[in-house]
Image (cartoon, rainbow, N blue to C red; front, top):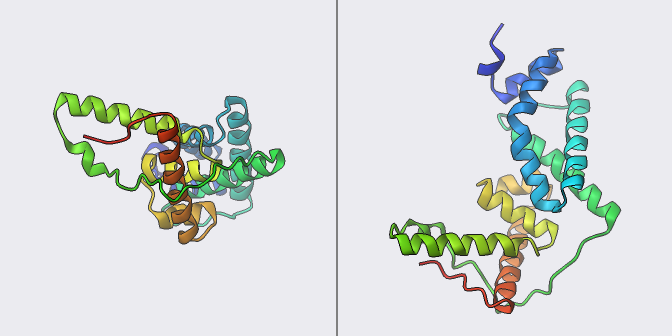
Length: 198
């Protein structure tokens, strides 16, 4: 039998479905930090994040035990989908969708990762400050917008992967990103925050 440490997440999931409980322990160990970080980033409350995290893993266990997982090479995306659904269920129960007005004159799309390549110390400091400010501004976005920004820039998912994970079309994912950037530009202007990379 193959050593659990050398198995992929997909192989561990199959092993768990075949009755190896230690395989699930390894899956949990490998995925818990990234999954909890994602949930906490979206809901902004440690207790709520813990509840949703536990709910996510309970659902994952149930799905695996019922054989409702098909190995596609993307176990973490499958888990993210379960977490996303649990988050959306929680928001529906709480009815906490707070929207920020969209203003067409604002747009952050001109910030690119190429801007981060400048190696001077001063530019590095300014760029780090801008990224810190952007992260703070993201806290004020509605959950669906904050989620797509997190998946795109912190987890480096494609818009196709984001769409599959969140259960929406690619156009909806792109739209959420666009409005997130617009909202962050508006918030930056209201708080006199300069978001220009050097």
